[in-house]
Length: 96
Image (tube, rainbow, N blue to C red; front, side, top):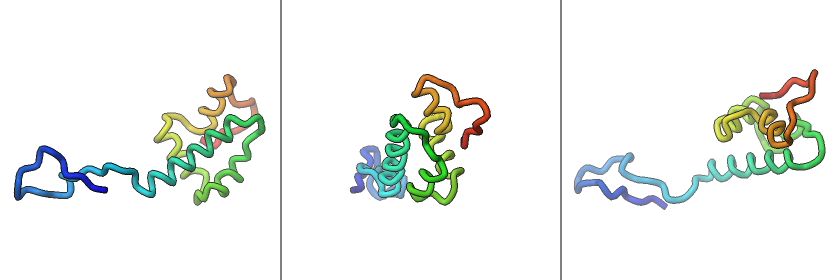
């Protein structure tokens, strides 16, 4: 649903004068994907990042890492390590 901004004068409408009052389908899919990623981080099992990328429908890992980092401010492996109270194990290369 679109809503007209309050500070618009008559006869001067443009696309910038409208604000979206509900999430877009793209936003909903992104939110679902990141919710799924963070849920798996909370599970007591090792995450197979390659499998997770495919299951969530990403074209490749870089798209997951870029979107996750944009939303949370850090790559998924760093976020997972911080949330678990530990750092990534030596010898393992984070995907982000």
